[in-house]
Amino acid sequence: MSNPALLTRMLAIVAFGLLTALTVLSIGWLQPGGLRIFDSRLLGYDVADAQTYIDSLTPAARGLYLGVFRVLDTLFPVFASAAMIGAVLVGKGRAWVPALAIPVAFLALDLTENALVGQMLREGPALAETASRITMAKWGSFFTGLLLALAAWRARHRKGDDR
Image 1 (tube, rainbow, N blue to C red):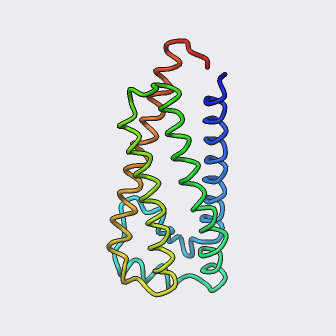
Image 2 (cartoon, rainbow, N blue to C red; image 1 turned 90 degrees about the vertical axis):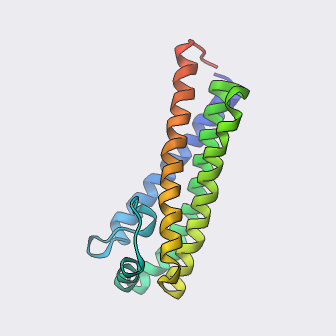
């Protein structure tokens, strides 16, 4: 296995670990009454939904969301997008470089979402519609980037290349 392939695997493992930690924190402490966190709402939310969620958070939960959760949720898209990019470059090389815009878009969208969610948690749901659109676009780019990375990995292994 080549160094780039090993690095890509390590990036993916760290991203998976971060996603697991985010899921545990979310389900365990940030879903009062079963309300899902903003980041997990694949189909978006409106201002009323956002206000209901914000009002349901205890001060400790809000602190967790704005603290440890935000740090992990900033690291996750960095590692996930780097792993997607690595998988494409290792698997397909330069031929698929234009497709790298997808994981880069995921990174930009997730970091933008994080900033908007943080602002909503501090100041209220005025930005909910914008944040919701960013959240839905983030998930679209994440799943597309994941499919892209898996296709590149599969193409590489179909050729019997074990770099």
